[in-house]
Image (cartoon, rainbow, N blue to C red; front, side, top):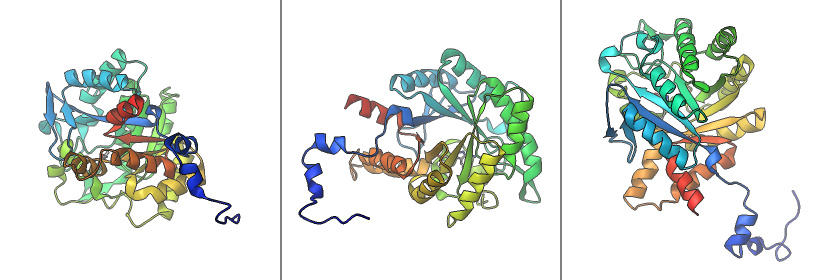
Length: 331
Ligand code: PBG
């Protein structure tokens, strides 16, 4: 690198006041970079608190429609929807996931009818629908890959048909992106975007989410380690992403975000394609709880999101999206 010597160079010159600091800032977050996940609960009206996620609610569809409007008014134009399914609809193969007119597909239709311009992301995975809490079909206590893909393909088609703009497979089966892309092309969903959770780690940071969608109890002590990535690996993430791009992913996602900034960075540098990151439930709850307790300043949330962008993410799914967007726009 260049020689930099004091006093010719005084880096503090550019830190003299906040206008200067703003002028040379390298990373910025705007509302356009944020995606708000929401939890919609079947056969339910009103709102319900989620113990492990301060300030985040399970919403009946009635409230979800109001909340979507609030999100749009806050300047966030993208949402990711997660269903909470009646326990008695869950079974070992997740059949409810592919039923015509099921709760999430009718919810998506209603949201897109009311707010056609919103970018709506729908997860593909069986865990909201299985009584064992796994993302796929179990045989001899193992999640079986290829049989699971057949179901995921039908789930993806149902969600595309309901009007989801982006289909986001979060299940980590091998080959599912290719299979889903092929089916979407064949069924004439040529513009449905595939956002692949390509590098999804077997992380303990998902704990509060599993609490939110009531899958924690079903999963019990069972682990997702046979399909989600080992937290110690980075090269493997490059392979996962390469495969998903080749199979037809338009956007790839790294998840979680804050503990995986190195992965976000190397993926963006290597592939230079649209790259999203998910500030997952555990990351959010840690920060939000500390903020609520006044152990940390409110700005740690923005700092955390900025770090994720600085690492290379183009957009971030965050439970704080709506609030952060309001903060940025009111500054
Ligand atoms: C399910 C899914 C999970 C998350 C998004 N989709 C949990 C899991 O894989 O167990 C986690 C999101 C979060 O923690 O905020 N396939």
